Image (tube, helix red, strand yellow):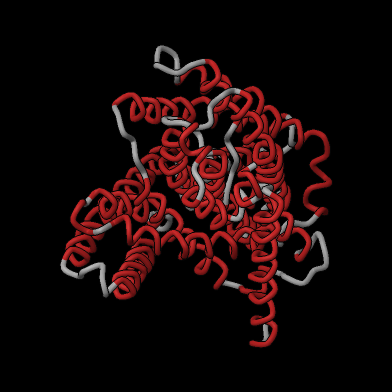
Length: 425
């Protein structure tokens, strides 16, 4: 690929993302929906201006680094204010690890026609809700506590688990792993090793930030943070593939919980970079979707996704929140809002390349089913979450009436221009 062509790829991608964010700001539509639509327009399904595979091996590197930035930002912002919230997140994670994995496996095989190995990989890939989608929606909707914290916590915990588990199931399907014992050991090594490395690196970074004043050295603090994060992520991936994602979350949690690091001011800078990463990644990965991969799935693929959305998710939330202090409207919103995000798309794209290189039949169907899941969950749930939350009375009345802060957050994610209109409507 020529340098000129590579520059055009990035130029078109970033410009399309910026236009999508601007339209979201002007219309009040969820930014993530328009970002996905922009990717479809510029990619294989549209005008063919962007072909992510032209990046070659660099695609995985770029996506991994930018995703680590998004997850690090999520870790900084992770707040589970009380025991009830932490218990709810833990129970949702555990129930979905059992129920959603099994149900996804069966639905992908029986309804979408994937073989058992690829169906297992699909089930792990789509296990987690995406923080890159949930966080902007939570800010736009202004959900009352503790719903936003529960959704954020669920996504940040399950995202790395799902990615690591999907990789191990892929290696099992390709014959690189031998038996479920090796899979379980690999899962513990990657998750445990990633969290341990991330916690240590986060503590070291927090100690360094503590010695650098926020003013006037804010730019230096940002550069040190991003440099440390990227070095940590790359080192983790070299030692234990896919361990960089749990490491990024753990490092963000440690830095965010240190009161002497001025994490709030640092987060304001990191958040801008994370939003830029989202603006770049969503169109880039959506550009890899082709109708040729979606059309063979037919109604069976749609039925598979709808089963996960309308049956498996509500049952899992009902079981996980049984006996906890959640009202029926709160359970209903948690049961509905589960969009998949960038990590899901990135893992699917990279795994499809690896499966095609190995000559595995059905790699395109796997990628198509994953992106169909993303398109349906982001489109249907992203567009309906706001009206549903208002109808159920789950919007925070204080935030609903606030002006500048909520509008600034919404403008940054390109999702809540309605507050900028006259009268605050």
